[in-house]
Amino acid sequence: MIWFILDDTIEEKRRRLTMDIRLLIIIIFTIIIHATETLTYSIRLGGIKLSRILVAMSLTGIILLVSRTANMVQGPLVGGIVDAAKATGDINMVLTPFRYILLSASIGTLLALFLYPTFTKLSIFMIKRFEVDGSILNIMKVTNIQKLRYTKEYITIPRLDMIHRLRIGGIPKRIMLINMVVTGIYTACVLSTLYATLLVPQFATTSNQLTGLINGIATILLTVLLDPQIAILTERSLQQENGVETMTKTFGWLMISRFLGTLLAQVFLIPFAHIIAWTSSLLNSLLG
Image (tube, rainbow, N blue to C red; front, side, top):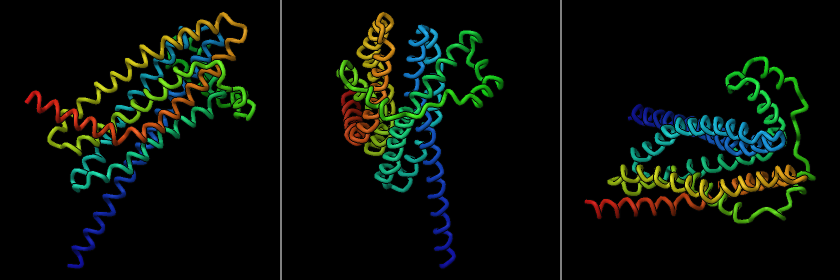
């Protein structure tokens, strides 16, 4: 009898250790993904400073593609946490890990804010090299990596006067609000959908399929409402003497609104899950 108890205890410890390692990997992935996506604003700013907007946008697209591919790798790991909850029958056990994952998204975005001045300088270097080499793989040559390693001039520690220069005057409030809300939806969507599969396990497949629809709506909102406004501001900045300073402030506030959006995702998590669960039930009742 004692041996059975010991075996159960050891098995439970192994299961918890596996879950902790899985969660740690997910958190690291999430921090990298959100930091990378947020830092693409630095590349756009570098393009404005060099008057190489199209090159900067091309480089941004490549980096976003790599980041979102990494996000796909993260998915199965998160799914493992949900499977463990289904096995134990305790659906609420996923909420704490999900909160940590959303918190790591905020940490990644905050890290990008701290690296904003440094990465803007690095972006100028990358854009220049991209024009010469024509390939992201060529930019990552050992010789270029070594140049970055020994070049301290790229490192810029944020100072209080930089924060002071980010005064909100002149920045369209609607752009920041849209960016914050859409970021919140985008960040919470996948986790809310996974939690919804636990709320209505009989409609789990339907709930899962709603992820693409919600993310698609969020992408459309960004494309229709936000991207054109940023494009207009960028074009105007190229025609103004203080255009670079204006866009530095604009991208800085977009990063801040993105950070607030990741915090908003904490609020969205459970309500979205119940909305998705209700929608799944409604669709099955109507089509069934």
